Image (cartoon, rainbow, N blue to C red; front, side, top):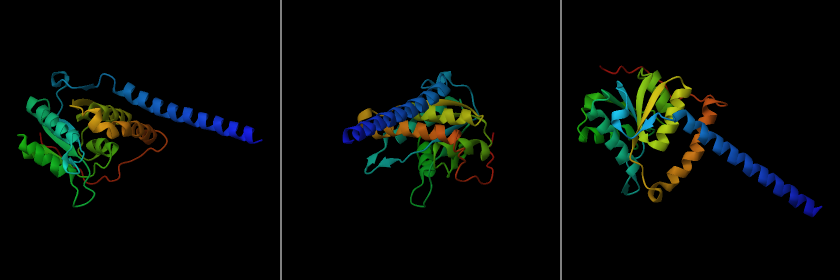
Length: 216
């Protein structure tokens, strides 16, 4: 009986691991397929678009600058100066008065030569889904370029397409696996969440709010 019980436990563990692998692999593949051919690190391949959506993260990690943030700001500034877009939406977390990603992003971009009046802050971009959906529902944009690292852009483009939006990703420089290993590993779980958000959960942004008109 003991041997039989151990065998059953082993079988259940194997089946559980196989199911997890299937969910992880399936979600990852779905996101990759949806973003295929829609993300580039060459600005010349991007279509002219009124607005770019810049996805936020913390400017620093402890006492160190966050390279994910630094490279995104560099890419966003380069995109604006290329003339491919006329305005930027900087979308991030501002859940407390002590933590304000959009304002930090705007300050960095102004320092990089982007006019302050061409930068619009989305203070309720708590998740990638929130940022993407609010670009349409709050800022009135159904077609835009997304700025982040490639792995993040792929998921954002996937979410945009699932919500009927036309999005292209402009890839910021990525961070070495040594520095960004935890972020890259979390991405696999984030893709499972994204797949659930657009299927079983039908997740909505945490907040909506009044419309914001973007000046031509």
